[in-house]
Length: 68
Image (cartoon, rainbow, N blue to C red):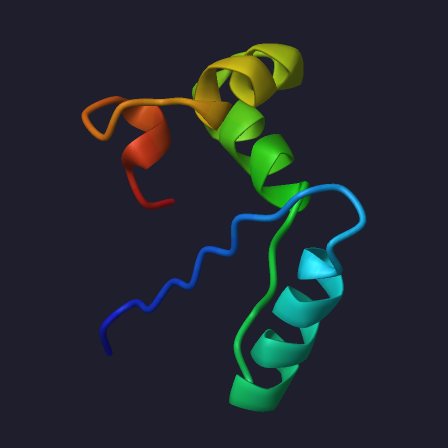
C-alpha cells in the first residue's frame, strides 16, 4: 500500500489542528502533530528543539523531508 500524507499549514487560532484531526478521523488515517517531532528526535538522536527550529523551514533535500 502506498503512503499518503496530508500536510496542513496553519496559524495560531485558525483551527487547523482540529481540522486535521477530523480529516484523519474521517479517512481512518493516523494523525500526527507534535508527536512527529518527538519521533524524528528519537530516530535521529537530534534534540527536539533543533528539529523544531530547523524542520520548520527545511529544504526538501535534508533529513526532515524523508519519510519515517
